[in-house]
Image (cartoon, rainbow, N blue to C red; front, side, top):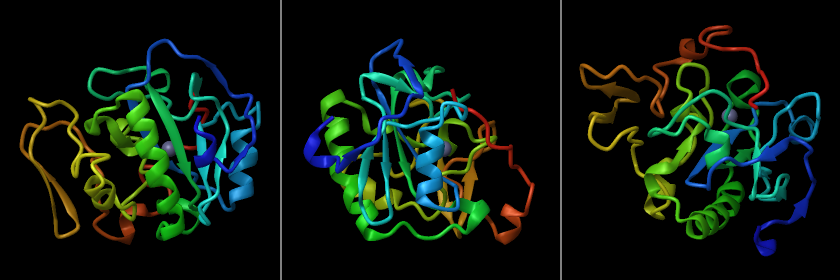
Length: 216
Ligand SMILES: [Zn+2]
């Protein structure tokens, strides 16, 4: 952990030992009503969730779990052959109420704090751009964070992710962002690639949502 990129440390008890080296970064939104509620939950032993870093909307970066340890943020999911995503990834939570509590744009200060932190993580662990993904990329059936307002294009311009995620270099198919809708080629069985919802009904209460659960 690079001290100058992290403003404070609030150690979370929710971690265990990694089973493999870091090769991914997973980005999330907190999806809770307040930053404090999110921090409390990420440090609550009963919740069994955590992340390595939490970035507030004002750009304050909180270190929660040592990068050498396995934080519990990804849950069930997979990416390019990696099935224990928690073991293979650094998890970053961005404070945002999310679709349940009032999804809103990620402020510049928050993204300006994320960029150098992400660049540092990617460089130290030699993470390929294709492995900097959102929670919705690794668990499309049950997760939608960080959502359509997250500035993937900006992150990609800094060479820190691909403009469009590719689950597998060869077999994954063209995905175009077009008119606010993601299109997948016939034959693709995957869904949820940084999809921009078609409209408000896409987030209708209860639809496609799975109750929050431990992401151990
Ligand atoms: Zn998430």
